[in-house]
Image (cartoon, rainbow, N blue to C red; front, top):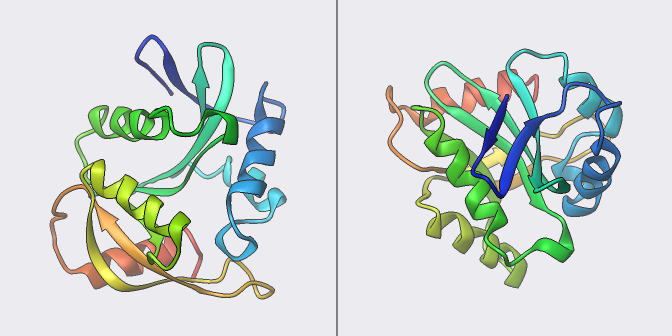
Length: 180
C-alpha cells in the first residue's frame, strides 16, 4: 500500500527490516506514553496481522511520521498517528489523515486523550479541525498488557458509522486491536 500526493507519501512497513523502520519505532516510543502504546515486539508482531497496517509518513524520501491503522468491515480505526518533532506544525499529520480519508470510503475512528492540558487540548483541536467529532466521551482504551493501565480517552469519528451503536464499535475495536 502506498498513497502519495507528490510531496508526502504513506508507505506500508512490511517488516522490521524495512528502511526507516528504526526511526518510526523510535518516534512511536517517544510520541506516546507507555500505557498508550504497545511494546516494540508487539508492534512488530502486528505486521503479520492482515487487518493491521503500519504506514511510514515520508516527506520526499525522509521518514517524518507514522500511522497505524486497522481495517474493519464498516470503518477504519487509526490506532496511532505521530509526526517527528522537527516536522510538527507543518500540516503533515493533517495531510496524512486527509490522504487516508480520501483513499477509502469508510468512516475513520480514532482515540485521543481528554483535553486536560495544552498538549491534549491541541491534539483534540487538531482532530476537530480535520473534521472529527466526539462519538464517545466515556471511552476507555484497554490496557495493552497486564503491566499497563487502561486509559480514559475520547473516541472520535469523521462521519456517522452504520450501524450506529457505539457499543458495537467499541466492542469490535477492543476485541480485534486490544484482544479484550
